[in-house]
Length: 178
Image (cartoon, rainbow, N blue to C red):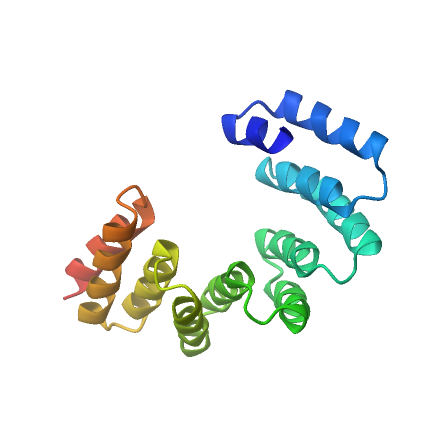
């Protein structure tokens, strides 16, 4: 229920639910991870990181816990630390599309476009219906000045998710670049 409150923007109720879940079951890593996600959304990275660390301590084999910690490193622009966490998470689950996508976004932020492109290709190989995968790959193709390929990817992203605003922005950039 706490996660629904987060989506609705009712963080006070969300944290009340997460705290109660942790009080009732302090050994459940998912409760800490869920609360960490809420803190991260609010950009309270210190609390998010503390919750992700506790989730990892409780369940070190869950790749999502490790990937979420990498997300905090990414948000703090510590891209090297983020990549270490994403790599560690992928050692546990090489097909985790969320982590591969996040790794690609991080490589893009480091301007390692060829490596980022390879990650987004893998994302789309695993899930060819993921709009954000096409949008992210289109953004990399824009950076590589491959505008026609970028437009094709961004059109596909928009077809799959007409509400994905970033795809429209990136497509506009591609048309300007042509």
